[in-house]
Length: 242
Image (cartoon, rainbow, N blue to C red; front, side):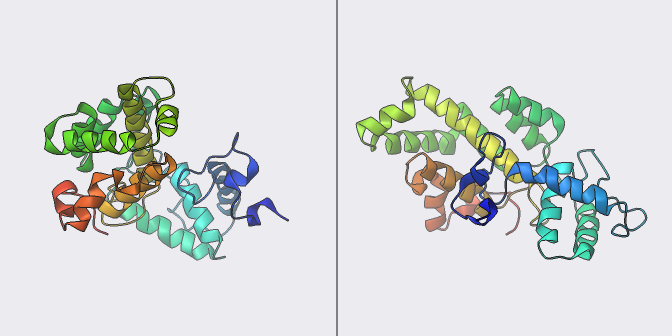
């Protein structure tokens, strides 16, 4: 049986070389997609002036997004869809991660990352900064709510999460992980009016998935509770449309 057909096998049984934080596809497959795209670009797939690998600036699709897009469209067997979607993508405004932001994440500079994102129009970064700095009503409330949920866990699981360290150390790890998840979703975003500007559902989804992975209830993400109360606009003002 082909590993790719086994839907419950993480990263095709090769987590050392393949990562799939969203559950959609392994990053290792993107290199395969790029090879396919390179071959296609030598045939009649692309029109003059429309390159599968145009760009490299912050305002164009990078190889990672192009690879994801190629994978999605090749699954339908239509090269025309690749051309049309790439052209359509280049016409929309985008605020995907730039190289400086990705370098900040590599250095675990979460504050710098969100400050840069905010300056470029990623309005959720304003709330994220409050959480990271433990400031403001929403920021302090989110941190207290996370600590409450951790304290509800059995002692053995709580100690496992803290990994022999302090709660503040655990909280820093959570902030780094969520910033990286945000960056990933920003880079694969092809929805809404601005590529790289996430909607409240996209933000909620990656938070809930992460907290569930930690063994915490999905309502650990405070935005979920506000959604139940009809207060989505309160925490996600300026987010992209659904």
